[in-house]
Amino acid sequence: MAATTQLTSGTWQISLPFQSEPGIVGSYLLAGNNELAIIDPGPGSTLEALLAAISEAGFTPADVTHILATHIHLDHAGAVGSLIQHTPNATVYVHSKGAAHLIDTTKVVASATRIYGDRMQELWGEIRSTPKERVNVIEGGDVLTIANRRLEVHYTPGHAIHHVIFFDVHSGELFAGDVAGVRLQDIDYVRPPTPPPDLDIEAWSASIDLLKRLRPDVLYLAHFGPTRPSLPHLERLRERLLSWGDFVLGAMRDGKNEAAILAMLKEQTEPELQRVTRDPQALTRYDIATNYPMTVQGYMRYWQKKHPERL
Ligand SMILES: [Zn+2]
Image 1 (cartoon, helix red, strand yellow):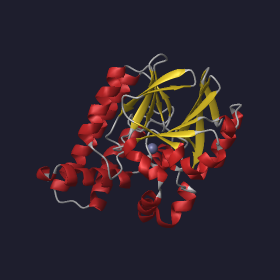
Image 2 (image 1 turned 60 degrees about the horizontal axis):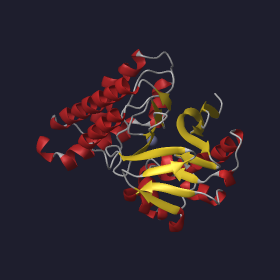
Image 3 (image 1 turned 120 degrees about the vertical axis):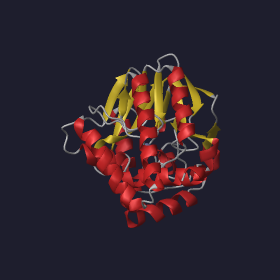
């Protein structure tokens, strides 16, 4: 698969080789009117590949005018602080609740280091802070005029408290980040990425309603690629988000610990994915995009924090 795929006349998809695997972590490029926007530049570990993909699409880093983050998780925006040093004409757009963590990455680095330890560099590369004057804070309801488009910003919490999507009303393209789930190419299966600490099932379900009301023609997933039709995909995502949550809640009420719940959830749900693909790497590839330990930790924290009365 090529690293860069032109989707429409002004839209490119970039496949970043995260953990050396293409087709799992992606960015999008929007070009027009002498402007070039990157949506979700990915982790610092794939920055060189991103820069190579920009030139493969026919541009230079100096052409980049906008860097848009759907949210600040490291697989989406970890590269921002490094990228900005290569793109002198670019401004970063990020939701108000995420901006502080791009401007000062200390807390993000500390919490990721607690999780990933000595794999930090290999997984995420450099995680640099972004100068405040290069950051433009956005909110739901904003409209960005970029690259000959009107991009509506919609606030979509649930996966992360600072998550937004970008919707081009005219073309029907919706840049979804992670709020529309993880569905790898050629596999008809959507998995909810539910890491701690922000997972909020009710908020996410409301965000799914919002996405459905927009009636997008196509969802551009970060993990991975164009997905249509959008409405059945979003309903399947909601169904799985809720049913995995119920499963974890039930196991917690039965007094199971995290390790046991992890094993039970895998046993219960891995066959769902295996039924719809013959790709022997599918489980591994889905785990690179969103792994079971984080999934379980996210749900457990959610129930403990938001609904202790249910436990
Ligand atoms: Zn992600």
